[in-house]
Amino acid sequence: MSVTLPIYLDNNATTRTDPRVVDAIIPFFSNVYGNSASKSHPFGWAAEEAVDKARAQVASLIGADPREIVFTSGATESNNLAIKGIAEMYAEKGDHIITVVTEHKAVLDTCKHLESTGKSVTYLEVDDNGLICLDELKAAITDKTILISVMAANNEIGVLQPIAEIGAICKERGIIFHTDATQIVGKIPFDVEALGIDLASFTAHKMYGPKGIGALYVRRRSPRVRLSAQIDGGGHERGFRSGTLNVTGIVGFGEAAALCQAEMASDAARLQVLRDAMEARLLQEIPECQVNGSREHRLPGLLNISFGFVEGESLLMGLCDVALSSGSACTSASLEPSYVLKALGVGDELAHSSLRFGLGRFTQPEEVEWVTEKVIAEVARLREMSPLWELHLEGVDLSTVQWQPH
Amino acid sequence: MPYSDKVLDHYNNPRNVGSFDKSDTTVGTGIVGAPECGDVMKLQLKINADGVIEDAKFKTFGCGSAIASSSLATELVKGKTLEEALQLQNTDIVEELALPPVKIHCSVLAEDAIKAAIADYRQKNGITA
Ligand SMILES: Cc1ncc(COP(=O)(O)O)c(C=O)c1O
Ligand code: FES
Image (cartoon, rainbow over all chains, first blue to last red; front, top):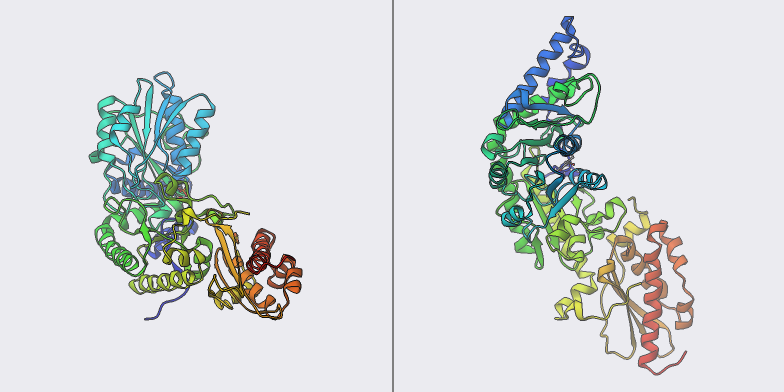
């Protein structure tokens, strides 16, 4: 079994651009380099044609009409445009927004910003599986509620919220429904009609496309959703988002979307098998470890797991040949444990020693096996060195010990 | 964060991992830190009749620098008298392992563990320093 190190298992942070996508983009740097807004010459027409094709490819992936796709710089911008755009446009109708504590910062910080401008925001809690409760959602709705924003799949734990049910509630109550669909689009079926979605944010770089290009789906019919633009200028993208279009990025996004649509079923099935095998082996070989988030309602390629009695940073050090994310933000120089895991009720210690494995299209079975064996060996080695593990084996309940914090 | 070669060496090949019997009167045990802080260090010293540290063992729950600091501490104290061991400073460890500023507290923990182990030994044997 030979693998090339380091191994990339951080596909929920970003993905490798598919070589077929790269091939599709290249001509648009030096041959077809026109501005798609130039209506007076063939350079512009060719660029516009390419953008139209890509828009249709992206729309098709989510069951939308091409005229419902607004290209942005990525999901962060899409989330900002959706939430701020609705808050401004529907200010006369109401000032209340409902979202969830486990959302991505691009949603949470946008909502925080709106709170500072006088809007009111309800942050729904989640259960220990990471799922919201629909009754709590219904109870949070007031006659001032203009927007509900709930992510489709969580980036840390992969948990899938009941989007279709939320869509139905929003429709019934006449509230606009936005979803951060960044982690789900291209991975498993996601259809804006079937799910009753009004606005959806997503980005190319999580689905084997390039970075710096994303989209916001904006419903045109029943209801027609209106938005205040957040970037003013030449009135591109039907006035929703000004700025010369990122033609190379858009072409790559389109190609990535077409590939995902064609290969989604086989990719998802393959990743699910690999992930499930990894999960089963880790659970079997390592006592005192736990999977974080619902195992039933979850993306196929993601595994978030915590190991008791080992410290996260030392575990990552032992896994230095593997690119992955940890639930302690040690890596970002703060000792704060992940707010997502905290919201699930995972204690600080287990949050610190959690790892997120993100498998992707280019992940090989041998790589997953190599990493699995390495994790088993490192956890065992570190526990051998851990005074907490020793106490645990002696039957001591650590919460009863008198520690000496320093 | 890049680790120094010395930290990596101690992390990959820790010296003197293990435990002595806590109730043995020739053994001093120091446990410092707390799980919530992300670091707990246990250092044990085995002391002979002449008051010399004959052997030392550690177990550490903590980052790589904490593991390296305690591993080095066991090496540094061996063969020393209790008085000499008490002279060891965290800065000796910082220097030897080339610890960056954010990791200095890992070395402080090791110094504290040595002191705690010696205090435990003295208390057990009714010695007032
Ligand atoms: C759920 C979620 N939303 C938003 C983003 C931000 O996407 P982008 O990097 O395209 O701005 C990410 C990725 O980091 C994400 O995982
Ligand atoms: S023990 Fe806390 S960072 Fe090293």
